[in-house]
Image 1 (cartoon, helix red, strand yellow):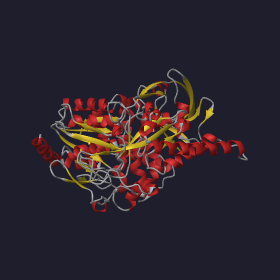
Image 2 (cartoon, helix red, strand yellow):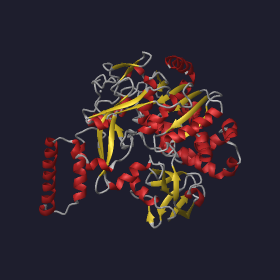
Image 3 (cartoon, one colour):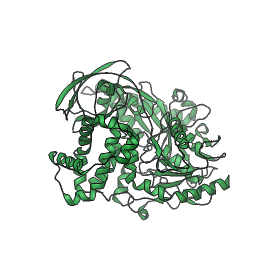
Image 4 (cartoon, helix red, strand yellow):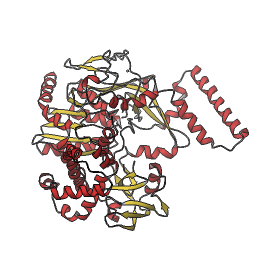
Length: 590
């Protein structure tokens, strides 16, 4: 994660809305008539996301923003009976709190009690209606903001130590001399190593106003010494579009990690760059994307979708929360073939994009069933700076389907993703739990399903071919990151003089480097097992090269390498002909 460690409906009031999971309606049509492993296998696929500072697999699954007028107009949204009932219950709560404050035998923190009570109350609604205490609001929102003020460093909390993954290029931390692999052991006079510390505390210590200064004491392993560096905080841009590059001479690749405030602008920039490089087909990677602002998702679809086709619509208890979003402008990539990569970590705004493109027969969906989140939340600022994210409507794809998975038992709901590991769904198509009672048709007549996420057109099982206890030990003991950061820092000038194209094409982890890595792993008490190593070898060497590439060229040096061995990317390229067929149907319709 980084020190800055969601789509909204653009209706007439320009209110900011949040989308989360809900009970599906039966057979929703446009008329809105009613429409539900081993440790190594789990940990290793998550490593890449952690290494990139993403850490948002199930984080901000919402779309949109905040409208302070909403809380003041709540009474106007309720009938008299509901208003009186809510007022009576509020009086009861105030009465109980008053008795606790006056009579309870011990001193208590009323804020903590109130926060706990609110959370318990909201847990009786749906899994996405939530309450965020004031101290956590800024951190929760920071991933979707366009920029933030801080030192600019990606880090991971490993064994009670803040380990720098990498300083953000040209950031205050980079200019101050912070390096990949540094362990932050003190922030000003506050010890932060080998003490119990959480991300909230790290966030508070590292973030700060622009031009303010902070002294960081770091331990640098490859030099075996401590240093104290003064960092002057600045404005740090955040990117939600990780990379755009050419997979082949005619096929471009764009990776979107979440839908933040500037996602469409970033997407458009990468799209235009790839078009200039000769792109005819596009692979859009939304794997692990937890969602974000809906308006950014809608704009992305509109860039790819011609005509006045439906993109998404919402249906709420009150008419003010009903909306329709349609394509309305001419995009710059309305005729090229499109493949969308999706998996169990793709939620919310990601599912709006995939659902709209699938229902309109505009894109081929490749991967695994998405998360299944179809509720809309609205953030409401409370008096003390805390925030209520209240579910106010459901969203539906163009064919009328709600992709919200069932949540009658919120405990089971929270464990549902883990169940996909254990029941075999991530590895076998016939284990996918789609609700076949909710059948819909795309514009060309293909069958799609609601009530449980977006099911891909082409299923790709989770790649576990390289999983072994040996590779699990490497990652659980942080060996890959430690070795690559040390090797890079010792050879930094060589890499800085190299072009990324030359690195991708010509640099290899040769036998000499491989042996040095294995010796380092042994020094970290990773017991070598040759049989297991041979199974995992290609993956490990690819990870080493990609990690070095990231340290020098960021994502431009990472994804072109890591994707060479990526099963879903390979499947996308192998099925471009099917995406071309869909494109023909789509263009004929137009």
